[in-house]
Length: 88
Image 1 (spheres, one colour):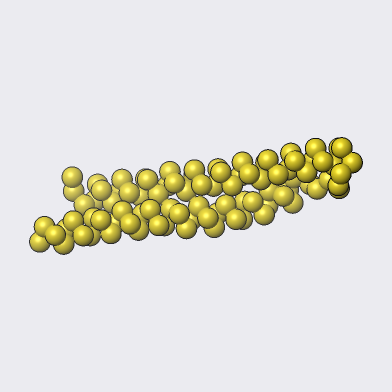
Image 2 (image 1 turned 90 degrees about the vertical axis):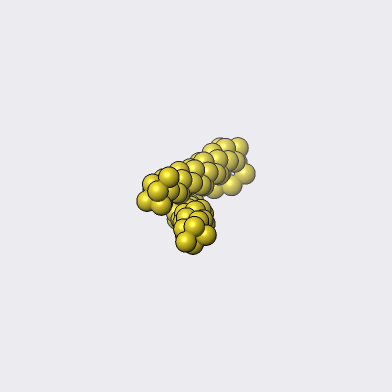
């Protein structure tokens, strides 16, 4: 496989990782919103708007997903570089 094809494969892997990690953070935000809403209905706290809760989780999700995706793509591209260096 050529280095260009491998680089594209690793980039696609990074996009998949980014989407997966971001989705985990959004799911956790939705879980927190449902928990806060249930507690508010039961009289154990004040309700908070979904936009307030999800904005924090979205921001944190973008950061975490970007770090993980950069890590995966960086390591993948490093393997391509090392492979080319080894062959030369």
